[in-house]
Length: 503
Image 1 (cartoon, rainbow, N blue to C red):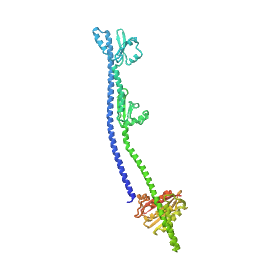
Image 2 (cartoon, one colour):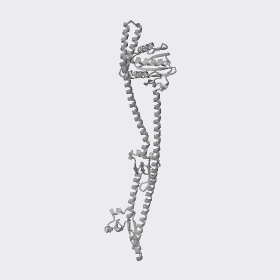
Image 3 (tube, one colour):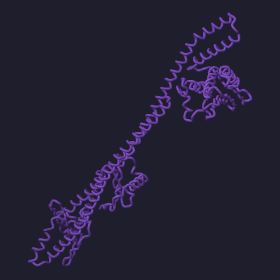
Image 4 (cartoon, helix red, strand yellow):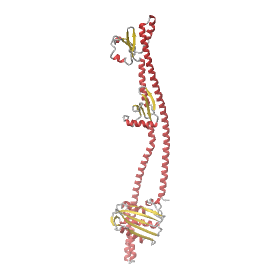
């Protein structure tokens, strides 16, 4: 099993492990969130019941005050009747009417005659201190305003009629203040003690906000925002309907707390952040690894070129010595070609890592030169065919040494794939801005899952091989010539590599 197959499997295992961790985390977080939501809902239900109970208490208290007001009016009317009867009563009845009149110690009353003059009064101050300065004074101004809340009661005497004005008793007034404070505190407590959930209390038409709480992400003066918020709350929970003395029928809308909403989306945001971090880290790591690999390639290439330099110089000297000794010229010619080839290889390795010079070369001639060299270094069982479909032999910016290296690598791999017996066909096509060079063989083909791996350093299907040829070819074409090289198609009957170069 090669290193890339192992690497692919490890990626699958790690991805599965990460997916399992994420799934378990999300599952566990969802359980916790649901538990918190249930607990919060239970608290909200208790709060809602308390709201309803408080609302009922306020309503009953208001009814009590209404009844108290009615009873006080009856007491005032009884007092007026007692006052009238006191004047007309017999002597034995006087004690009874005096007792009725004197028992009124809480309800402020003023008697006004037909000339609008105050003739008597009682309980004008809560402390009980009476003032006679009002008697004989006109019933007007501040005193009339104070006693104009209720309709006066007519007190008929023999020959004249007085008007009896009254106020709420001091006891009722104080209790009424307590009642108003109770209503105000009720609204504030509904908002404050709402278990940290967003709350909006509206009127019966659901248009006017009476009170609100925990609404932190919007403008309550914006009617559109208010209507959208109320609609969203109504979708989540049925609003409470309460009766308030001042406001009448009111609706209490509420929803989940912002904390619970954050808890629901926190795991997703957390995993997105972790995912982004991992992606960035992977990109940086891959970039650093590729840069390190490039440094290794450059170092190895330059060291190889340096190591080849000395034996090549010696071989050149030996060739010259053989010429002096009269060795067969044909043999010496082939030896010179091989030595020259070694020089080219040395130049190729020395140029790795540096920008090579590109010269405009006829592409068909460049291909034929490389193929001709391969013909003499390959078994005769392999047939080479070059098909020129350009019709004009276009110029392409090339570094002949490096480009020839690419064709040699492709041809060597093709020979190995055919086991040294078959046909290698090179087709050259011309396009508007590009030239296509297709190198085809009649070998056993490349599995589809391996077609990308073959260009990776170290990948090889041979028992003896370094897996560097196609990796170097890809670097030469893409990095130095700004072109492309890839597997155009492959099947059990053969493979075609395509080289794309700019004209």
